[in-house]
Amino acid sequence: MGSAIASFFSKYGIWMAVPGFFVGAGLLIYFIKGVVKVGDRARMFSVPLLEQQLIEFPEAREVILWGEGPLFSSRFAKLDFELKSEDNGIPVEGHTIWIHSSSSGLSKARIDLKRFHIPRPGRYRFEIQGLGEPRENDAGHQLVFMKPHRMKTIAYILGIILSAFIFIGSIVLFFLSLLLPKAQS
Image 1 (tube, rainbow, N blue to C red):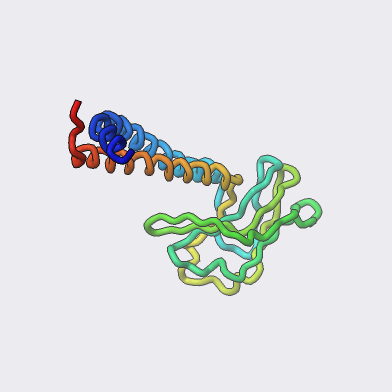
Image 2: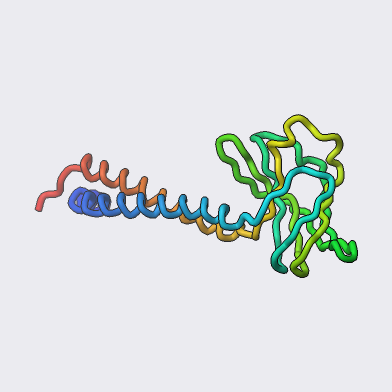
């Protein structure tokens, strides 16, 4: 059995590895670009760190509040956020996110903080409790309202894992087919 498998790979391994390499590389590029675009497309708008401000939502929908700032920042810790209708001051239903998603680049990081269900388009008063006195590096921080995109992100990450498996597997198969003794025909 083992010699039959070795014989098969020594005979056809290169023919399977080369297309697998290009398919895996192409899919890897596609899924990496896709996961970046998902985050960019989900972004609605950002606001600075202010205790109170008016913001406008163009449609009724679910939104996720993200904190964005320098890597390893703890500026969003112990803050609470509230959104109230400008008309009547009724608070918008909001839920704290207990299992946080995060993303980071070379200099900035983003973490999801709270989920709001915007009942209707219009202006809302956004309030931050626990902000305290302004800090020197507050200009480097902002709050970002985004459309929900966790499931799309997870799908792209699974695609990255699968395509990386195909890509790396084809490289391993290529070298194995070169190292295995050639089968006699």
